[in-house]
Image: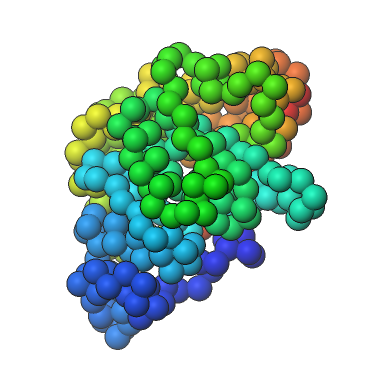
Length: 291
């Protein structure tokens, strides 16, 4: 993980339970005599997340209902730290403004950007319910209200249009795009992930609450063409906003998609770089580009 990531050390369950007592109902002792939780249990993951956000990021409250993506906070924090490196945001003379595409009900990237670096963040989503839930999470903590705004994208064909206002500037945009091209692909991948969870560190995993209940949150997990087509569409639309965003960025979960994305960036004469990240055994990356 990034050297600044607060989650480089094992979870302190005693501390976490102090901040969120409900987590203690899910803490167990493994065969090595160490405290842990059942990482295949979606409810235990939710309460671990809530405890981390209360303990390490000073949130008063945070909730997501069943059916919404429950993000691995350590990996999400890594993305934030590497964007900070990209921006050299240690220059505190400037207030950094970031745009999160597809913020979801969990609103995790705006929350982390606000609480780690005091950035001003705008989170967007096409799902009206997710927007309402994200706003509720922001309202629960006073400092978040100061730093975070949530906007609804009404047109599913657009990514930036209808969100970025005239004369508005963002130092960066970020996105965790839908991974899969269909519900069937998502089901297969989720089943494989659940089968491996008991031997895999949660810090590398996305958890769906509850498992296989995709409901109205399909946009979080799949879209036509999968992440490659989504990112290529984002790149094409970003040209129109090249003077209003300093760095456009997006996670790329599948390494084999990177050459296709490079081809689109080269075609549009963008300057780009790939930032490699590592969380436990999982290798991840995001691509950053500008014009």
